[in-house]
Image (cartoon, rainbow, N blue to C red; front, side, top):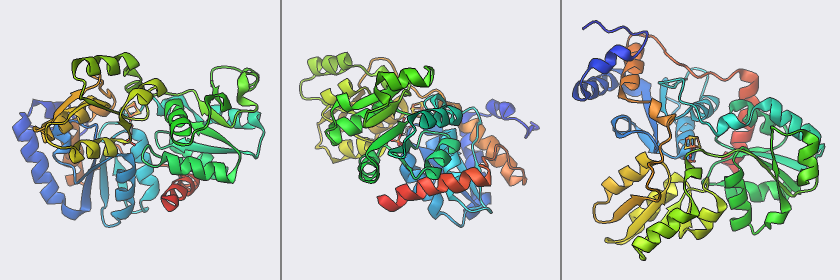
Length: 360
Ligand code: 13P
Ligand code: SF4
């Protein structure tokens, strides 16, 4: 069969076994020039080829450390690949195997909306902090205004730092992560928080409390994690009173409050690893990760917190045929889907990312 290297569709005609064998062979051919990073939410057929698997923070750090790799193929979503590009050198190329692998939460804040909000807040007392799940332009905005990036594994430290620098904070773009960390970790009352809705007029947001709130939360959310509801916690506990409920902090506050523990994808994995054989867990996060944890621990009971399979549909776009297509092209000297952040944006975004890296 003649493969067209301009698009991955013909590669779908290969059997899974042939696809796997060809990826393995191309990895051997490309050697140390190539590194494949895989986020925990990726499907197994991609994860099995990853040189490093991690949460968004661990992968950003790994990308920054692998100075010798010419090509970094990012099996994750667009904002993660952008961050890798910002943290790597000019002679390194970051590739996203499918450009449609975005993040609906990151798309809920664009830089024009954020500029408008920040101008309306009119205050040098407000620190902008953005969750990693945001565009490079938003990270650059934070860097330019003295702020920083955080991830779900270090948000508490970054929020503490922010409040030690300035009395008020604008937290982008996930209202739930911001609310959970500020309320549950730092004890800030909900009455000191207000929601900035980019689809309302600035005056309306100001009148609704953003003019004085200590914590201004951007009205963004994850469409996967907000599928977990407090009733799901009650249901799994009714079925198994010994079950431990562990969730990602992108879930609703009410879900996190009812849980036994919460944390980044990396932390959720550790919690199951550290438990004694026979322990049972209901996990509120993306289904590919829950299934992988369940498979890795046959001596424990691991189920999804919800009966509905919560899948990150954009992560799911990266599959073995796309990975193979990327590598086939690379082996022939063709770079498909490079992620390049322009230098000015990258310089400010790097500031915000490096502030995070220096604080943890
Ligand atoms: P982590 O930072 O835990 O990897 O989460 C990233 C993410 O997109 C969760 O939805
Ligand atoms: Fe974005 Fe949610 Fe998917 Fe994470 S799980 S990448 S926040 S849409």
